[in-house]
Image 1 (tube, rainbow, N blue to C red):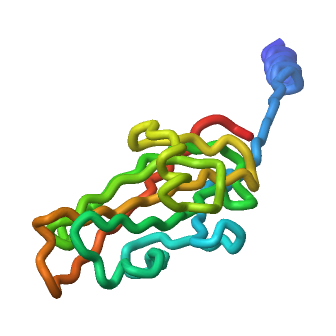
Image 2: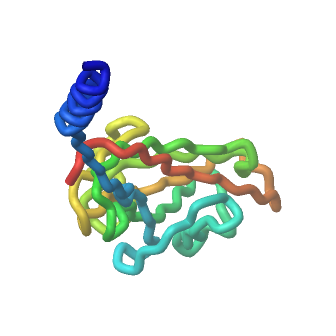
Length: 171
């Protein structure tokens, strides 16, 4: 009888083992792409990720010999990189700490690669931010630098504009 109980106990253990079950699931993930790039002519875009590699704005003739009451203009286009999976909110900051004394800088958003007094006057002054919501659709920025009567003869200076983008909705 003891032997029969041992056999019954072993049989019960085997039966319990047959009722175990498992499920396994695996997920594979990949990061999306996101970025912005700029262009000084509105057609040839590349990334300028820091001040050492900044795009050089070629302000119109006269920018190197300003006099009081002069204003010069230059455009810059910003768009999403072609592989971006997300739209962007872009904030513009303007560093005038090295600006030429006696000048002020401002900018507006336009829908044109042209940047002159007429374009600037018609541009939208939407503050320091804009959105990029589609691939291959840049926002054009028209910069104006104006001199006043406190301009110091022979002096030089520079202004740096930075475009900081934060990803938003998936495209």
